[in-house]
Image: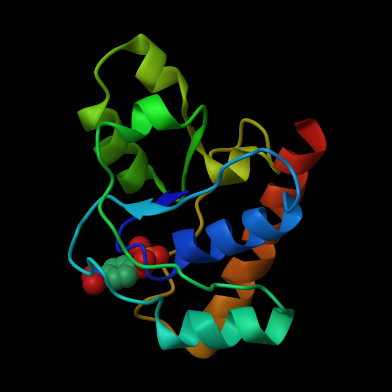
Length: 144
Ligand code: 4NP
């Protein structure tokens, strides 16, 4: 799960997906296309949202996406077009590129919808982002 800062959207996606896949052999992680917040816990507003909906964000710390992530993961879900562009910039070949997809295409195939960046908005934006991510993650789980 990849966003820009790895403190808002992608940690929420990681927490939700981890909960949904709990007990399975699938590995879930998140990263940012930037390393601005390297080592930081998720944003307090996202932590509050997670707590409200019972999503665990234990142990999640921000980190930058690395090229090795293409070897470690089968699927790389990005939140918006800017993330998509930046992830594709470090992809090495067609195999890497084929792993990358907009997260909301899982719930809204072919529509190229984006999970909006809630960082500069109000608290309500965090609830909306939670609901969008949850819907997409449930579809991903159903298809596994
Ligand atoms: P995220 O949100 O990409 O969902 O983690 C952001 C967090 C931090 C910044 C931008 C977006 N920032 O500019 O610091």
